[in-house]
Amino acid sequence: MAGGIGSRLWPVSTPEMPKQFIDILGVGRTLIQLTVDRFSPVCTMDNVWIVTSRRYVDIVRRQLPEIPEENILAEPEPRNTAPCIAYACRKIAMRNPDANVVVASSDAIILDNVKFIDAVRKALDFTEAGGTIVTVGITPTRPETGYGYIHAAGAQEGCVGKVSEFREKPDLKTAESYLEDGGFFWNAGIFIWNVNTIDEQLRKYAPQISAVMDELAPSFYTEREQTELERLFGRCDKISVDYAVMEKSDEIYVIPCNPGWSDLGSWGSVRTHIDMDTDGNAVVGSDVRMFGCKDCIVHTSGCDTVIIEGLEGYAVASKGGNLLVCRLSEEQHIKDFLASK
Image (cartoon, rainbow, N blue to C red):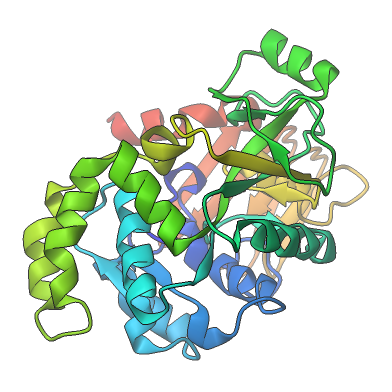
């Protein structure tokens, strides 16, 4: 899934070029390229599908030229993850009626790919017979308030266990209790299922979306598809697959895993995944000179020389003539700052 606009990492990530298409870590590969690389042990390029906004299709083609053209699906408008997933899985099912599918976002990172792929393989084996859905639950390393949680009492890392419920983003005290309990896992939005299973679950719990797909499906792989998509896709309920299916179904399982996952949803999280100097500063840029600075993230790859003095705990980022200088403690308000004048 590659349709997000990544507004929390402004000004480097913008609606015109969101974070999944950016080398945000300064490693020479964009996040979507790293995501495709990650799944290469279990999936050939002709079985990789990208669902994105139509305005990003050309970017996907440039960054992932090895993916077949017909595997790049262009949403005419954003309708959240349930319609996006329903569209992709219905198309995949028409080509391969018994396909097993892994759904993942294009803008997260995973540091231990061996551990992650091992969990994915186990989940694929579990879901192959159909009837069940497995989500990868990230073993929490801190009392995080920015993620939703999966509760599966007694679930063991690397083993598939039954989910009892999903929990919304908690306050700090609740997150601390989750960590102490040990039966809670971060919801990373990584799902594994058979195409027949997700079709059955959507028909049961999101029949409105399924009805739209039924009307749209006869146009798949024809010259009418894009026209019909323009006409029908916007009718889908705007809802996440978590709300539409995962929180309602009795067939949800989890495989706990701790592969060094992050959704890179803030400058603070980006900082923790870039090599830091002895003062805790993380830098992406060709010539960044820091004096008396501590615990900062600087992302100024488009600038020649950058000099920063005396900052502690700040995000400094620039791109396309825009500049951000913001305390990391206040970065959750970046959207609000952008909206005000």
